[in-house]
Length: 73
Image 1 (cartoon, rainbow, N blue to C red):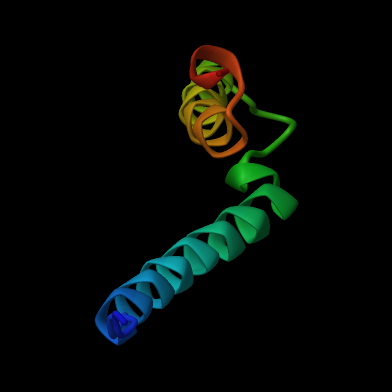
Image 2 (cartoon, helix red, strand yellow):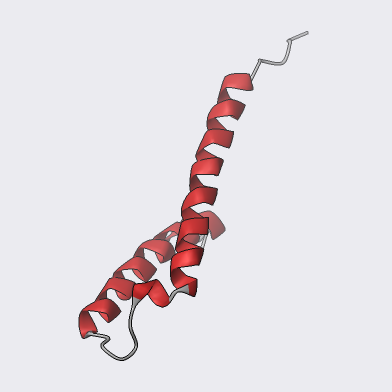
């Protein structure tokens, strides 16, 4: 009979990465709530491009996480 392997190192690494992601998401949520520090009275098109870039990166992440887009099985 095989003994289950100790996965405590893997679990610790997983939880550390999860905490890193949770921190990044909280920071992005706060920045989004502040309209990404954009002033609506002086908003340049460059800020739109910045958000387009951010959205494209997040789409890559969500497509991978939810097996959508190019990651569809």
